Image 1 (cartoon, rainbow, N blue to C red):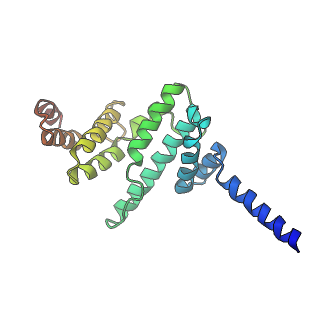
Image 2 (cartoon, one colour):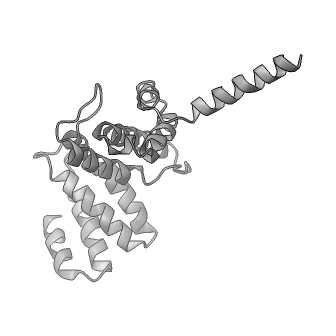
Image 3 (cartoon, rainbow, N blue to C red):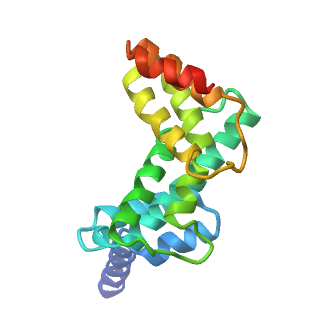
Length: 192
């Protein structure tokens, strides 16, 4: 009886330890199954791992997982105004992860995932939403950083997939004005 109990405890401990081990395959599988929250948890473990965090593939997975998680969250928010975003910073983190992946290996790619250049150019609308959220909170410094990334993303592809009618430039200009960066603000008001 004692041996059986010890065997169960040992098996339970092994299962528990293996569940916490960083694995790119687990992160990718969760991404592929569209379980983006689980994929985020798994890729975060990989990013925290010294060996895995030096690989372009890890950052590409993070970028795509965060991109799709952000898209999923903002879709829920669009359907229900009362939905509280669980991971509001994911658009910016995805953008930064695409840059990191590209800095490690310009040619990094993975099946059914965006390449860094493609992913960065598709993030502008999510970055705009996140930036405007920060602007509405009067967090002008963070809003400026996020909206600048949105402008960069928007201008990467001409014409953009979904052209905006000047809203992005207007919000960015207004934010710059609130920071008393008036010369820059005028430039973006003119673009709007």
